[in-house]
Length: 143
Image 1: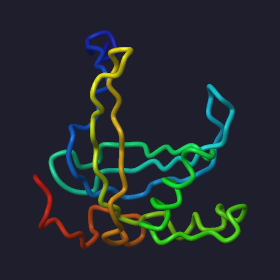
Image 2: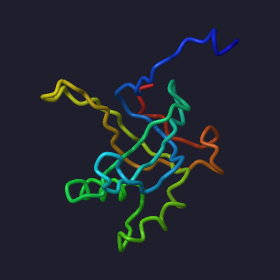
Image 3: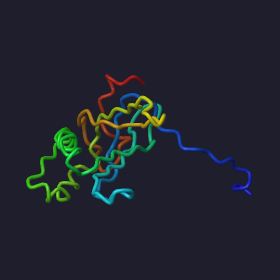
Image 4: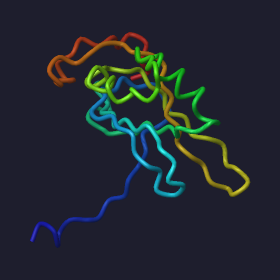
């Protein structure tokens, strides 16, 4: 009965702005379209109006994206040498609280816009995965 009464909802991306989000998962996975490898982090907003909303950081591991990936990894305290050992750093990334920024692109030639997630810095670590109990700096957030 509940299923029949419920209205279907659509996915709405996070509005543009800065957020503090906890790293919930991190992994290397193949891109479904190109089969290239990519780094994926599933993040959960830790504070504010959009608390508990999920957002995905996704960066291809290719010649064009590696400089950006390297900079983002440095912002979260990861400098894998050699890069082939990247997965050994993943446990230390889990539960970090990151300041991220969501920006929507201007429409391209195809008329589409895209939501882009940027990592600004690490702001803390959630104890035992309990992001709601973490001490998080909220002084510079717009909400």
